[in-house]
Length: 234
Image (cartoon, rainbow, N blue to C red):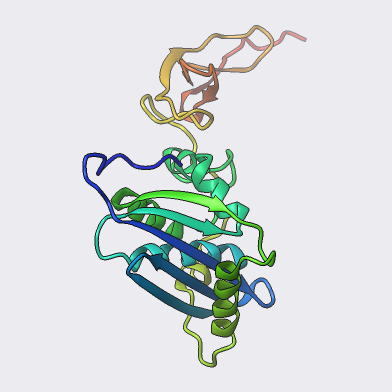
């Protein structure tokens, strides 16, 4: 994800944030650790949940790190999670959001509640996500790992409600039924086109929906019509 330009004309404070998150096992008790570095300040934060996933803790760590900031900043956020860094920097999250959080025709994106929070924070701050290799001797990364592992071992951890109360990811994608809805493949508004009868079929579609950009077509069940044929003499 490119840096936001919402404060391009203002000299923003520059900060570095290191984050890490994990579970034992996965899914299972999870924790996150955050280290914020500023020329005049150093801050740490950590916490955990009784049941969650590695990926959720990686995203949550980034959220908590940005939430430590009291004013808009230019942030370089370091994480050893390629899932987090690539999803933000390569536009995966933005694409999922444009498609109403559908990754494919039948599969929704995971961790929508956390991605929404992270996107909102990136609208306030200018954030660049950078990947660093975990457990490779970077002292700041190692400190975040220590914080997250210590946090997940605390007794009486709270519930990660976004995980424990999640809806099924096997939910079927709602069908397109009218002009103006977004194409599943490219998010372009679809248009209505007149259908055609075919000689060897007992039905036809009075109209169908068509994407003018990627040329995908969608049949509308409500537009299905049966063809009446004369009775056979034999």
